[in-house]
Image (tube, rainbow, N blue to C red; front, side):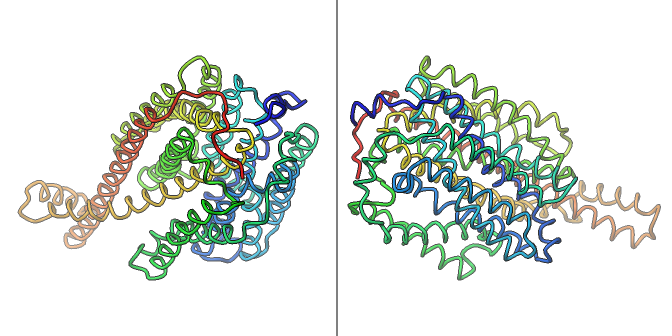
Length: 523
């Protein structure tokens, strides 16, 4: 890396640059999570089934996943500033199309365009912040970036639920228009390309169509399998099995091709860096825990405790408060404390809060979730900021865009895998627990007889004796299902706690963060 590249600094202040790139990032992350709570409203308004409505999410995620790892290559090919502005324009226009959609196919097409534009916004923002900040301030820069990536998914369902309940689901997309215009103006005014991009553009070579084809096939089939697997009973459905096989084979072909290609569309050689490879693996697991928790808690509160969609979203919101506070604190600690120690503490706290949630019952109040969610938010800040700076901070600047695309892709893939695992565990676990609990519901069990006669006696005040007994069996069957579901949720929270603990050994593999080196070749 040349001396000029080492010494380059943008003319605008880091704070202004951070605001410029965070606007489109927050816009994109919010849109990813807000749509979840409004699917029934979209389906009803556009005369579509619930299955058709889920393609509003799947189409976005597929397009998003395909673009994410290509971000580094496209930013060199087109210029980082120009590419960022193009993505903001396309995302904003696609948002307007989503809000104005008059049919489900039109909405899905708009979501594909939105996902393609949105996929590049996070890694572009991350790369711009990392290369614009001097090494001493990269921790604070990543703290600012983390506010959007960690906090936005938490407040997204709250904002989406409020807009849907009080106005219309269309406003989830229309609110992007003023944000997009402001983001475009700020990017045009304050963002500039580093000098090495011009030199890198001359060396980029021909378009890697084969690599792109393998990557698109791998990510598209993977996302569809993760999204539809539980719905379609996983590998018992032939097309799920075929899609899984195609996804696995195309992933292997993609990796082999990219490692051998002279001008790869995604430079996987960056994984030779120990910190980046380890950090990417840990970020994948963090994505699993983060997105699985965001999925589990609202489901538990709504289906077992009877919360509304908005109230369940509000129960999650304290996590955002904790994350905001820790992002600022950890941003100041980076450079003063060993980042690996912060990461280890963060995962330990995340594990403890997950095990705390494994103590849920049907008698708990909202307070049971409030403070632990604040603490969980604190742990996310202790993980995300130092993990990002340690993983990316030791890479050459000309690899920031490529590495950031891979880093963000693996977090999203981890999130998709995590959501699929916990939804499957809830469904299958509830069935398994129900079978075990039902073994205690027999006539010779005195505890069952006592409960049955108590409920039947209560029902006898309203119904005749025969009906009262039938009603009592129905009530006990419902209680059985409720208890089985509760045990399945407990299993899930314990699983996430164990998953968090699994990440801690990665701390001992990583090396202390140091100044960027050129140990990763640029092709």
